[in-house]
Image (cartoon, rainbow, N blue to C red):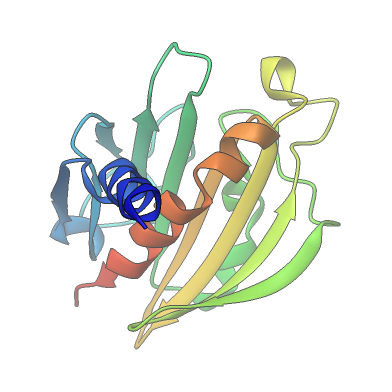
Length: 177
């Protein structure tokens, strides 16, 4: 019984012991929570999400990186849009020059606030560069007249290890209108 209790405490410390912070990007129509050690960098104009981007995308969004430069590095990019047809625009099917392979496995992720359409795939081999073996999750969701594309990518073992962390981020994701 003691061993079970000790294992339960260790598990909870590993999953819940991490400090989180709220990322308030109301100018992009979203708030969410991330581990406090993650880097956050917004790009593009807050008044027109369709243009004035950066090298990441010719649109607005946010780059979030966990464990940067470490073996378990994980990336997250979010693109907001107010145009439903723009969810699958060519500029939102890539991150920097990495193009998403849309032929992956499709599923749905439901949270308390939203429902996400998920495709688990990779970057195309021609564009992936150093991320050629990474697993990539593309999630799309909508709220009223706002639409979002989220990408998570890392080595497959890192994605698997961080699946509950990604779900916690998705659970905290809230559109702001």
